[in-house]
Image 1 (cartoon, rainbow, N blue to C red):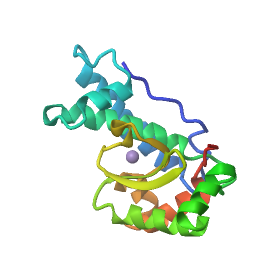
Image 2: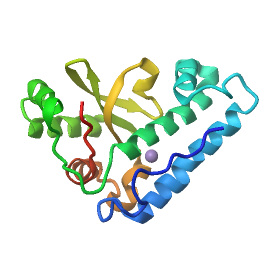
Image 3: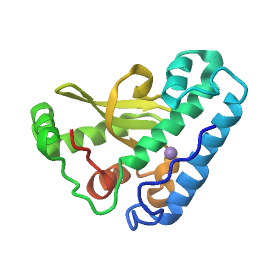
Image 4: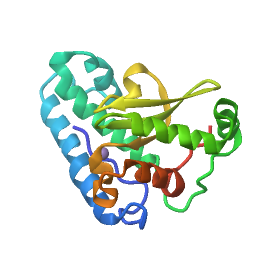
Length: 191
Ligand code: MN
């Protein structure tokens, strides 16, 4: 049985950039539904005692297990997304992360534009990630519940670009939501 993780901040603490009402739907209904559905699907199966990562890897690319993969992927991706945001932190990457961004993208400004371009190029529902592989960084888009965890890749941040993530606040304006994520919500890790 999986349990919802607690948000690393209060549900209204990302106000005004991610309103409490948006989080009530996103965390309290969408994410909860993925956790509840996953628990129902794995009850009494070989997946019941596996970790989330193990379930994702074991069901990846298996059409007959797609439903389990989708829900496990969505649980993992949302949990990483919650941690990719924080109230009142420095929104600029620093240290080694900034060095790697500058090396790969020329500047943080260029990186933000490139990240946004990739987010906008995701047709339909999905996720936009920044991945780290040693000293190399990659911006990756994944569709639906696909997740870099299935491939053993290491994400640094993710933004949810399913419409349910931004429709209440930005309607169809995904670009404005991604801008707001980078300017007002992102929580850069130290690497
Ligand atoms: Mn979502």
